[in-house]
Length: 260
Image 1 (cartoon, one colour):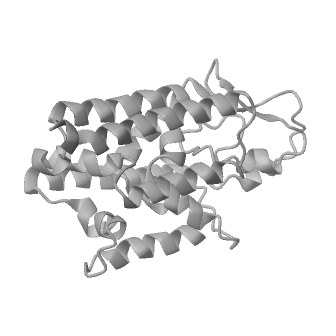
Image 2 (cartoon, rainbow, N blue to C red):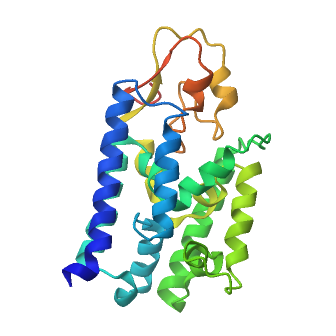
């Protein structure tokens, strides 16, 4: 049993370590848009080995009550999901940004130098996400339908080219070139929970007194979360804001009050 569950244990350990390492690097101002590429590439590669945890899949299987497919004890799966949720409440969406391979591969595609369409209607995005979340829960609990399986996530990371759903996830990746992280922002059921946790996260990207309000960070933020009073719930710590700031005004710290 220990050997069978080893990938799950190691994957969760990897997630916790990466979140802590990146948070420390952010505090020390040693983490940047370019240096984040290492973690993006590593987590994506581990995703093809099913070594890096895919919490949306685990969450789906819990809703379906499919303990056999979880590949780990039920309690461990629940604790893993809760742990990542708590870490997101503390550090923000570092897990979504640099650990979850579903997110990291979208991030890599988003860095292809093609102008993206920025969707600023945050309430509309949240509304769509919430609607799909309710649908996800209902289909899983009532009809035992695995909604995520139709998106081809498992087929893609298993390199199952024979699956008809493989192309669906490829389509999402192509969409990621033009619209930032479509799966994370519109579809991912677990991502909705992490978004709510990140909205109240203890640590977040902020601006210091060097800021001259040039608005470059706001123009370059793919989720429109770089304004001073933005909640940062859809901030994936991509560091595009820091990358374009010539005043070294962006820093990662504890936020004392809403919108700070």
